[in-house]
Length: 326
Image 1 (cartoon, rainbow, N blue to C red):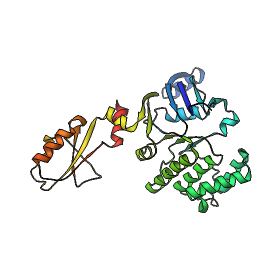
Image 2: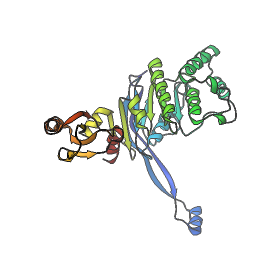
Image 3: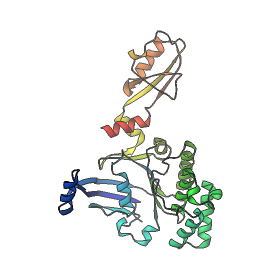
Image 4: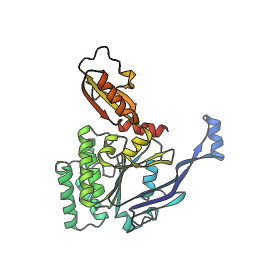
């Protein structure tokens, strides 16, 4: 196995999309001579991921995240560049590679809708040619982590979204893949379901050392699991590094929260930019440049009847949004 679990160099994907104006005459003309437009979904992306890393792969809708994961899992052939996953070229679809990876898409089903999840699991056992003892041991471990027991005998159509996602993830892990491509695995789940899936992924990574690329629109997924994030926007790689470093680079400011013994008549705007904080309504918050935190805090303590004061980083959602916009 190479040093990197995943090596991507100048990876690109361009789609030819048919286009025409509305109306019957335009439809007739397009029947004889169709016009196409090139759409660059992914453009010369480079990154390396080490074995055992959990990396957040972020970007707004249409940024190229799912297209990249589909190329790395072998579902799409790129129009340019190269990629190696566990030493394999993904789009060659070698059986040894397919047994080493899994792609779980939160908006796509891999389980048969009308039969119990247990039957779909047995089908996966046959597809991957898993010995009975290995299959049962893996299923027991997944059951321990995801509490699958009560779900396996129900037809998949009768499962709630959270229950189905548990079974979808389990089905993708029965062959113990070394690389997991997870595209919105917690989409649509309630807070309890999201937390449960995060805890499972963290524990699975700890037990197996699997490499995980995770896309999600829930920043709590990213902050709970990933120390490193990759941001892609309009097909271009915009950032690759730690969340903390991104905050320092994109949003070099801090939030100072102040609870005053006497809140009347004190204008905090003279110390910084007032901001709302719905999670902590007891304090009034201002935003200040990171380099000015010490001096501003000293002024507040000297000037005002401070009952409590806190200094925090900006919410990661704000940092990511600023990164997208820039």
